[in-house]
Image 1 (cartoon, rainbow, N blue to C red):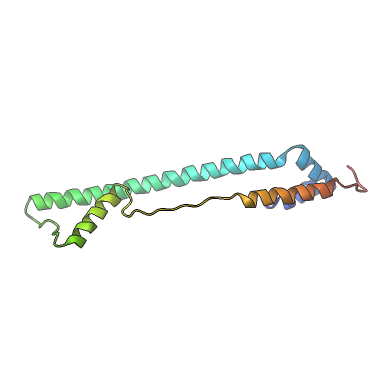
Image 2: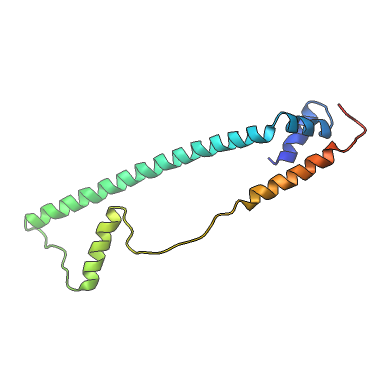
Length: 142
């Protein structure tokens, strides 16, 4: 729900003018409270997501370890031949597999850039203009 929709809902529920509801919004600093609530919600979502990702990685890593241990046991028991390394491509694949299992990068890449927060600044400019318009004299001052 947008801020405007929320303000209009408050005005309707408490049977006051839109302008009065906007004044409450500004005077009671609802934007800061909304921002804090949004951050709290986002933090909770991130924590749940991180927990799920960690749990899944642990499961997958467990499967990999079990499979590798079984493979090593079979090689040591003579039930299976070791992975043949016949050329440099085979060696590269084996090394990259080891790096991936250790959560290490397999290729070196350089990235650069900046992050701008223009949408937030633009939103604040729009809200300031809207509030200024609401502060203009009106016929009903509840």
